[in-house]
Amino acid sequence: MVQQSVFSVGQVNQYLKAKLDGDRVLSAIAVRGEISNYKCYPSGHHYFSLKDSEGALKCVLFRSSAQRLRFRPENGMNVIACGRITVFPRDGQYQLYADGLIPDGVGELYVAFEQTKARLLEEGLFDEGHKKPIPAYPGTIALITSAAGAAVHDMIRILRARWPIAEVRLLPVRVQGTQAPAELAGALRYANAHRLADVIIIGRGGGSMEDLWAFNDERLARAIYDSEIPVISAVGHEPDVTISDFVADLRAATPSNAAELAVPDWREMSQQLDQFSARLRSAIIARLEEERGKLHRLSGSRVMTDPMTPIRDKRLLLDWQRERLISQMQALTQTRRSRLAGLAAGLDAMSPLKVLARGYSLAADEDDHLLKSVDQVQPGQKLRLRLSDGSVDCVAMKKRKDVADRAPEKEKL
Amino acid sequence: MTRLEEIVSQLERGEAPLEQSVALFEEGTRLIQSCSKLLDSAEQKVLKLSKGPDGEPVGELFADGEE
Image (tube, rainbow over all chains, first blue to last red; front, side, top):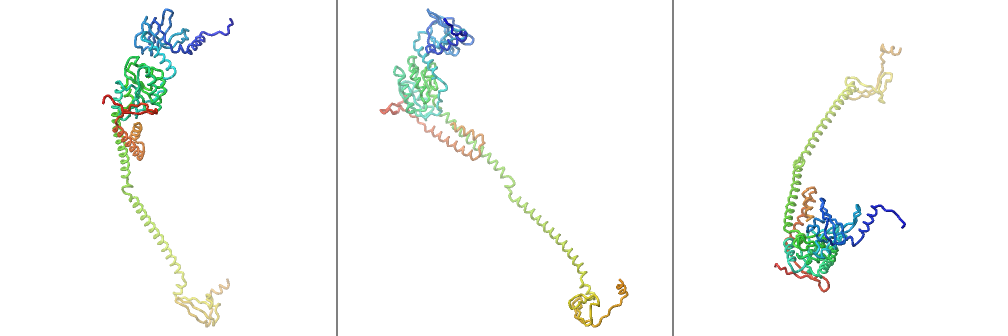
């Protein structure tokens, strides 16, 4: 034998694990056997072996699954364990990871239930992400259930009391027997095809496991999954769990509970409306008060109460300035005027007319040239004498030149 | 109801300008009126549906056992 390659232990275990995990039979399997070596660890996980005359199989039941058990497992008890088989790489042991454990002899139904559940879970039909919200105020509610029986009347009674606004549409179907799954699924698809409602309640009242069996049917599960209208599942009593409950958008414990979950209570809503109304009113009143207060403050301000004051103030200022301007102007003209009078007096004093008034006269020739010397005058020449109050035209008779002492002096100069 | 809730809390914060506040108040009042009207007019109808000859749903009043 030619050795191709050598593996590590870890590689072998991982390889085996991958092999087993990929196996369809092992991924959802039910195994019958007798419990032995039963141990419950403080972690809450349960460990045991299943054995029969031919061998033993190690099993583990995790805490979350163990909490759902409806009985206490004991050594020697014959059970059917459902789950998947894979390898625990740490010790290389393959074992059954059970998620359900039922006493053997209860029937094949349990096994079928667990297997369907495991398969659909793996397929993703129970994914939370796929679940649609239930509308808050549905206008139409479709009931897919039996037209006979207490459940439908319970639901109608509660819907009427809580939410009489909505129209209830009953799609009567058989809820047990071999035809039931097809009818239930058919009604669901029909309701979707005709958009018959805003929300659908599908269910029935309590009964035996066999009675409720239609709600574990895979065809119904797929119809619920495919429904575009949100679906509330309401099957039997509180402890009854069906595949429909896992697929539905919402699980109700009972049909009555479904009716409560499907609609709001109009009395509560009515009260809420009253509250809204009161809050709305007081909010707008508060708002208006606030604005009114603002307006009041503004209208109380001086400019609003006495708008003419600033104008009057300006007017006063203007008058005062005007007075100042006028008095300044008067003072200025007064100064100029007295100065002018002074100058005029000086000028007056210098006036030749004043000299004439004292008895002097000015002599001029015919051409009005002033005569300052006898030399300028010839006897017989016409002269004009200017006196203070007029002039005299006359003729020079004879001229005498003064012989003043000063004259020779002048000549000497 | 969601819109109503929104309007009321927006108005209660008092941040909106007066004109908008008044508009909100009016919208809220209208919503309350229409909701109340809806609630008051409630007369529940229960129809039993069956598939008609053409496949369309046909409704008949469902005789509720309690009435």
